[in-house]
Length: 287
Image 1: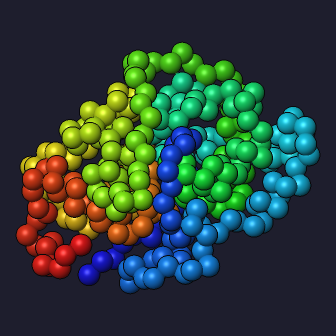
Image 2: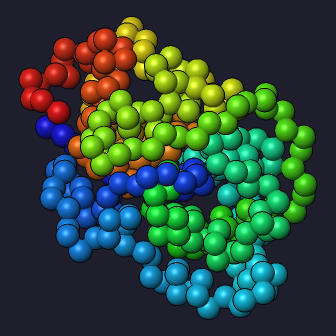
């Protein structure tokens, strides 16, 4: 029986352009007993927009500095809380540099106030597909006020310039596009959403891997992967690795990819490792 974890809260960071997929929100696609038919009223670019927060965004003054002033003030306590969230809970640094630390899949978020308006930053946090249709940044749920506080934190730069970048040089590569015919192809989905960190052959050495504090899982490692049930792989992709005590740098894709696409990724991981999950986890029902 499929019981995916409905725990995908927070915000990830992949401010990159790409071909999108139709992905209704968590509450619309998954109930307490697993996948169900998506509501046709849910827009194809992601979960329904959080109206209250977008209304507040629309009311912000036009001048950038005035907009910044309208966001909630980040107190020292809130700054520490947001920094802890960035290190332990949300995956922004898996794809972006923040104060000199983080991945290279998306642009650096240092000096963000010089390049982006608060309206844009907050909108990207709340629902990136609404701002950039086709983006590879997964849409994720978080309370509106937490999103506003995160936007204010990023725009303020925590009140100090970023330290020198300690990360090694990498060669960023754009994710490959996916055609309509490949929308449910596990290999194509893996190349687009996973290979930058896990490597094109699943050996854990993707081009973005050197920027991460924890080495990405080697999906081609048969010994390791044979200990992980398919359900655990599904849940990590759906809700992010943190829900299984993994690295918080891996974002959740449950609000971007359909259940069928996530199952296709799980099947492709099994091809990479040429292995199956533990015998006790296999019920004989196809994915």
